[in-house]
Image 1 (cartoon, helix red, strand yellow):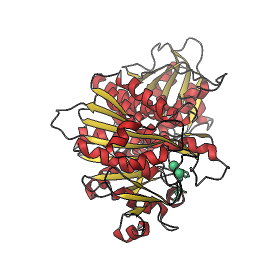
Image 2 (cartoon, protein in one colour; image 1 turned 180 degrees about the vertical axis):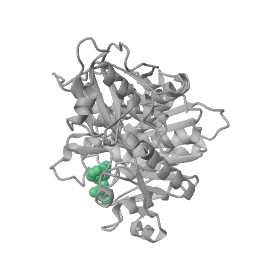
Image 3 (cartoon, protein in one colour; image 1 turned 45 degrees about the vertical axis):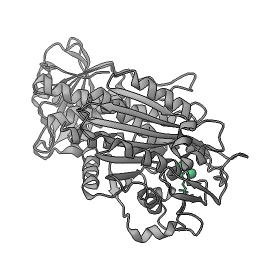
Length: 494
Ligand code: BES
Ligand code: MN
Ligand code: ZN
C-alpha cells in the first residue's frame, strides 16, 4: 500500500470506506469534524454529547455514516490538546487510527491531519509515522502456514495534510520504506532455521542486489574465508552441514571518495549452543539468532528504496551453530583473521566468534563508522529487558548519534560501559583471549571481546538479544531497523 497526499474536502463526496477526522481535547471538533458533522446532520456532535469520545489521544470512535453521505464510515480520533502535541502523541494517534482502520475491515480511508501539528510534532513526522504503521500493521507471517488467516483489507490511504504535496508525499514514502524494511527483517527472523539457512540469506542478498544498479553483492564461501584466515568464524560452522557465508552488500549512493557506513549483522541461522549445548526448553527461539543480519537486510532494502545519498556496506556473518563429530570443542584454540588467538571455552558464545572476523574484514572498506548488530547475550536481556538495545561504542560522538537516532525513531538504545576493567575477565593463559568472561557483566565482556577487533575505526555494537523478538505474540520485531535507518538518514541530511 502506498499512502498518498491529497487535498480533500471532508464534506464532499469522498467515495471512501472511511473518513478519518480528529477531535481535540474537551470535545473540540476539528474543522474537518465540523464540516462532516454538518454534512451528516449532527452525527458527530451527538456521539460526543453522548460521551462516546472526549478527544484524548489514543481514543477512537467508529461511526456509520448515513446513506448518501460522502463516505461509508467516519472514524473519529482523539488528538488531545493541539499545542501539546509531540512525538509521543504522533505515535499514539497513528497507532490508534491504523488499528481502528484494520479492525473495521475498511478497504480505503481518507485521513484529515492538517490540524494535528504543533511545534513539537511536524505534519511530516505524523505522515511518516502513519505510513510506517500502515506498512508494519499489514505484515502477516504466512510462508509456512497453509491457510493464512486474517489478511488485511486496507489497500489505500489518502492523507489530507495541508502541506505541499511534494513534502507530504516524501514523508509518506519514507514511512512506507521504513515500514517495509522493518517487515523484511521480521520475515527473515520469523522464517524457520530449515528454510532460512546461510545459503538462503545469500540468495536473499542477491535478490536485493537485482533491485538496484547501485547495490553490488558478493558472497565469500568457506574456502575464501579460510584463505583470509577467518579461523574464528569457521570454527562456528565446523559442526554444521550448512556452509557458512560471508555476505557483503555494497551500496553506492554517494561519490566513491565518501567513506562508507558499515553495518555488520550476526547471522546465526540456528544456535543450538554447539557442543556446549543449550537446554531444550525454548531452543526453537534460537532461529531468531540471525536477527542482527535480518536488521541489516531490512535497513539495506530501505536505503536502496530511499536512494540515500550515502555509501553503505552491509556485512552478514552467516552460519549455523550445531554439535557434531567435526564441531569445535570447549578448550579448542583458533586463530582469527586479525592474527589474535582465541580459546573457545564455551561454544555457545559463538556470535562474537563470527563477528570478530567480519569486523576485521570491515577494515578494508576504510569506514566512516562500523556498527555491528547482534542477538549476542542473554545477559543483555537481564540488564535492559525488551525496551532498549544495549549499545557500546569506542567513540562518544557515534554513541550520541545512535542514542539520538534511537530517540527519534523510538527504537531506543542505552549506552553501556566498555571499561578496560572488564577486559581482564577474558584473559586466559592459553590464548590471546577467551571467548567468555565469567559470571558478571556478560553483555559487557562480550562487547569487550569485540572491542579487541575494532581498534582501527569508529565502532559501535548493538546487543539486540532483548529487542529483536517478543515471546507473546511470538515473532520478530524488526528492531533495530528503525534506529539504523534514522542514523543513516541523519548522516544523509534527510
Ligand atoms: N544467541 C545467544 C544469546 C541469546 C540468548 C539471545 C538468549 C537471546 C536470548 C548467544 O549465542 C549465547 O548463547 N550467548 C550465551 C553466552 C554465554 C555462553 C557466555 C548466553 O548469553 O548465555
Ligand atoms: Mn550461543
Ligand atoms: Zn547465538
